[in-house]
Length: 454
Image (cartoon, rainbow, N blue to C red; front, side, top):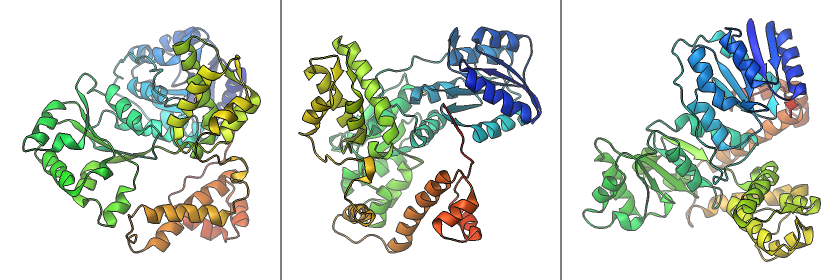
């Protein structure tokens, strides 16, 4: 790499590590803990790239992006932040940051992105946009890889006209994702309409529905529950949408692709709805986000109820270990109840056990579901896959389809465990290194050497 990089972060360790890494890569580095100093450097014409934290002692890095764009239209900015919410990703995208990475970040990944930023010459000035308030009422919080990937994708598709299909289990936040896409898009001043099956009834139902949502967003909630007649009406309605049509979004707990292959969902409707698919992971698939979400809900409860509550260490561990079959919605309702019923500032493990004891699926996640063999866990998931087809057989080719579904996460997890070392990974898996390389290529698995920074 060649160029001068301006680093702004109030964490001395991060400044030191980035300075050393960028210097070894051939860059000149100016590092500061002050946003004011960073802005002075930018105004003076210093730097070919900015790497900036969001929360600084003397300001907000996101708020500074429009000013940087105005002063230096071609200067790329990479935002790094411990504020791991969907709003950070959206605000960074709105302010036209070159890139955004959550903390803890992968150092080799940041170096690659920095190299691309230095090589790329952005000629058009960035549009100065004032980032909006962070939206405290959206419990779309998460620092896990899956959630950060989701946030980035939401930010990228937000202002496109592509239809959006949002999938995930009940309570994961599918409707919140749809609302966020609308509220922070160019359509936010237009109607946001969630359709009901009854809205499509009658001769004028579809046209009246399109008129209500004209120019805004139209969401079909749990589209898999619509019968064949309703699905056909939606297809005809979308084909006749005309000018100023609303953006179409749909949510579904079911695997619509599998239902379509099994003849239980219209193929023409599926392809009209799935311009881009956003999958919201279950809470048990992002265990590291559970404490973060818990703190978020407790902070909101303090604001709503005026009473400060915190979790004891044992209570926090129990909440992290619970399987949460109702996902984020169940977690939020549980913490709301604990905010009201707990008599002391610190919520104890006993109080959490009392609340969770009345709820379903008390299956500890720690230890991988103690007492359950891997084969039993796999069997449960396979049975659920078959059950999704409503008593009919899944489409032909299920053997290869399941193998691929298992093989990809297995290789990714093994690569993570061996820090991206393919020789060690191949040995761990018990396969030839060339075979591993071929599978990485065929499955389009991204390989990086992991080094995490807080």
